[in-house]
Length: 160
Image 1 (spheres, helix red, strand yellow):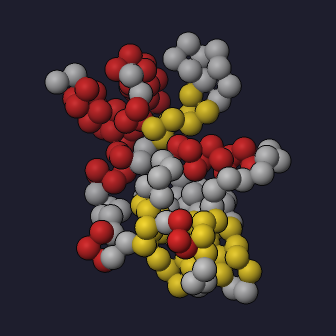
Image 2 (tube, helix red, strand yellow; image 1 turned 180 degrees about the vertical axis):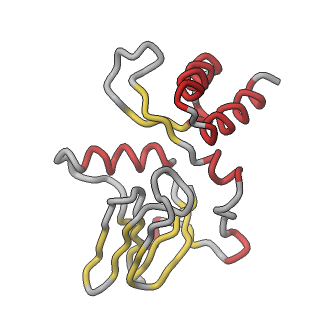
């Protein structure tokens, strides 16, 4: 996953949710999540040198990690050593305004397809056709048109 964060030259940090404040100290911090993903709503602030970097984790893994940290579990992600990430050059920066960026990073909170599992977040792109169809029905009842567009996008890709 490509992330916008900040660095102190030794480490990089990123925020994954609106209320995810992360700091390396000495004025190096991030808050507000990632551009145009999940609940960011245009709120981002940081101190330090902005940097785009790439990690192997996906957004659902990062979000679940942050969510569980709010319940007292130690966080696994959010701060990385600079040698453990890929620093992106400008031509590798994502277009965070594009539909594809939003779709590729869209997550869904689920209790499993039958509703009998603990809440966890999954990547919409990884959901089965049956699960996507159920999500679409639920979203239609709530007028969640942006999620419906993303679900339809993945249904079209999986049903071909």
